[in-house]
Length: 100
Image (cartoon, rainbow, N blue to C red; front, side, top):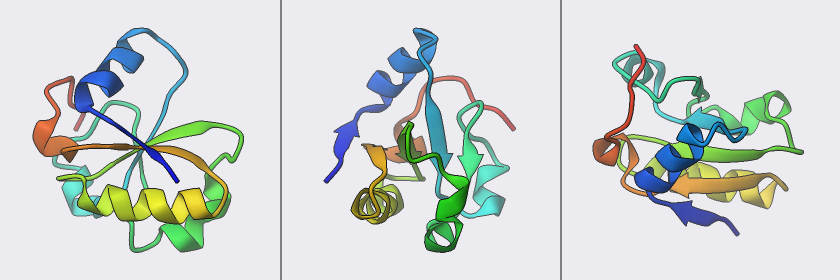
């Protein structure tokens, strides 16, 4: 199982300079339109085939557009032994910095 964090909790974690890994599971064309700085893009449709690119010893915050796809990705990753937190509301609710 996985926890859910609000965008405000994620932003607070980033601002505290605590180590954070953000995986954005939107499609690449969505990712380039704006994402959380430092996020890695792995589409939810490809995440199962790219598990070897994700550090199992690190906690990851999973992000998408609205929170639905990140919930699916969080369930997949959690079932595979990864430590994840799903960001509720996705980028639609994100008011922090954006990188292009």
